[in-house]
Image 1 (cartoon, helix red, strand yellow):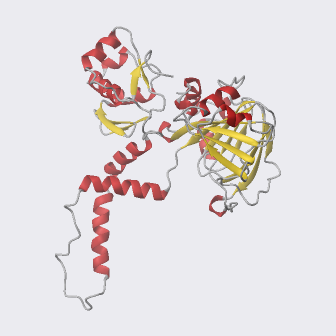
Image 2 (cartoon, one colour; image 1 turned 180 degrees about the vertical axis):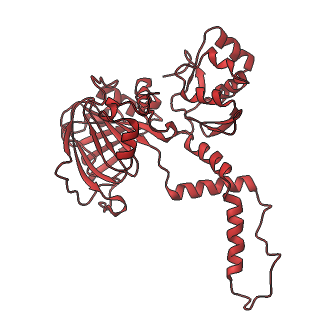
Image 3 (cartoon, one colour; image 1 turned 90 degrees about the vertical axis):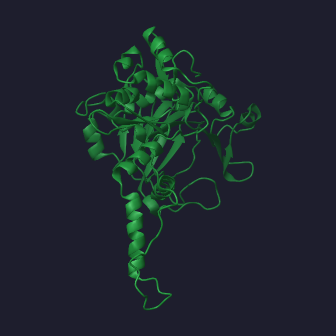
Length: 392
């Protein structure tokens, strides 16, 4: 990992600390040459091929669609779909390309100044000249890396929850979009634009081979957090703990719900949810939940720890499955919770860190206590696989 005090080309010469304090969730940043000499690992035909595959999330946005303006179609598509498209005025978006193309997944290694569990995926979009998805606002952080061709970006300031959207269409396109005078650029391959949540932006292809890589970050809403955590807590405590009023006094009015009753409920709720370690365990599971639950393939038969030990000792290496998510939390000097794809394991903190951060998962892992058992479990869950057997 690069030091937080080392200037980075990826951040326009800023250090990680400077970027996080000055721009992260605060203000946009244009970075010329963020990836010097960048060569896109995909071309437009590759992206179209992915959009034709079952199980890969893709969208086609047509400014003047067959049925209405700004029409959105969902894949998988076929050759006939692309054959009928006009020369201009449409965009193809493919989600989570890093789950399917290892070279795209490798891009995420450059963003190690943000907690890995905050990363969502890499969406790749293609548009011929003039293609866009309209001016809009996102509610998450995003780095927009120009992969090939050129894209013209215009920003319209921070709108937040005040954004007014065009009704009756399947996109969050703004009714009004006013470009800020100094927020207007054309990005070339290797250039990158960072946008915090709530900033209005409009990207239009300026060339026929325009590919843009969008590195997005997970930002669950308060509604999602409350709902999901309530479900988790409910599973933990079951039905035996109930509202009680052993201190009940004769009511002045039998139908009145007084402050004492409300306070009993408040105490019941706080007792159930105000537990920091329980929150941490839920949050780790939630933020490592796979984007697509059916993508990871569990082993058909249990893996013996001794078999893992033998294979690693003989020179084999493991790797994280494409789309797999890892994080860890220290419990004490000797124990940590390893979060992997929405599940947990308790293990040595150094082993947990290595499984999340190490470039190579090889025999060196066996120096940690209970490593073979932990690795066997992760292989069985589908979070890890042997390097030469994983499908790319």
